[in-house]
Length: 332
Image (tube, rainbow, N blue to C red):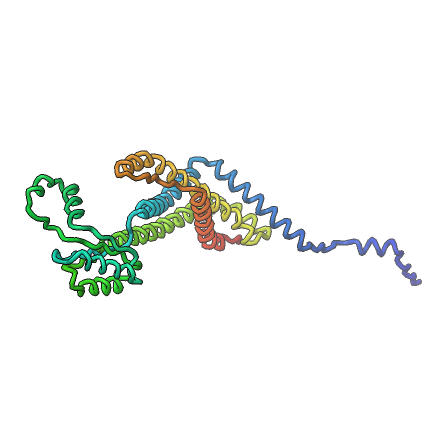
């Protein structure tokens, strides 16, 4: 006798349908989890840094020394440019006049030069003024007093408006063609030397900064590689349970960031101490030359520049190390 199967009750149907349920995670939840993990890795990086103060401090100190050298050179170059900013940085044309030139003709010639659009200033130095200056500068006043005539000619000091070499040469040639001039000297060699010296210092600082930044990258890469090897088993476990490479590399990226940031702050401190040690002697030397020049130390701009640049270098070095080694660690 066949038994009829009883229809399932609604309660039974609800019980059967209440099995495993796939829960969907919203975008907001995923972002919150991602942000929480970043915060956790940031805190953990600092904890790991201070958990091994000797090794972490040595790594940060190496980074700091590598960054302090080009930073100090760049700061010294900036102070040098500020020190020479008060000097006369424009070339000068010295026009030596014929001794037989009449004063009225010289005055008219100087007025014409002052009206020239290429000339900024014209200063007339009489033979008497030239002799007095020479006596004071050379210390030969007694010997010169016995001379019957003044051997020095009158001079016009012409200050051009620009510093273009071709225009200055053309102006000097035009002055040589005047009947009143005996000789014309274009004094711009020292200006060119100063400009070349400044450019040399700038390029040296850039080259040194590039080489030492490369050294910082190598230091961070080696340090992060050691961290990865020390946590190799931990990486295998988290990958075995489904962790992505982005999840695994995040703590190492923050570790490199912390190394760089601390190294940049120490570099700023080293440069500040160096400026403090040199400020007194430099100020005393400037006073001997009648100048009120004082060294400028690394301000808040240097602090953010060194800290941010070093943190970026640390992050880049960590990324290079992680990209090479994390992918090679795979569970079997």
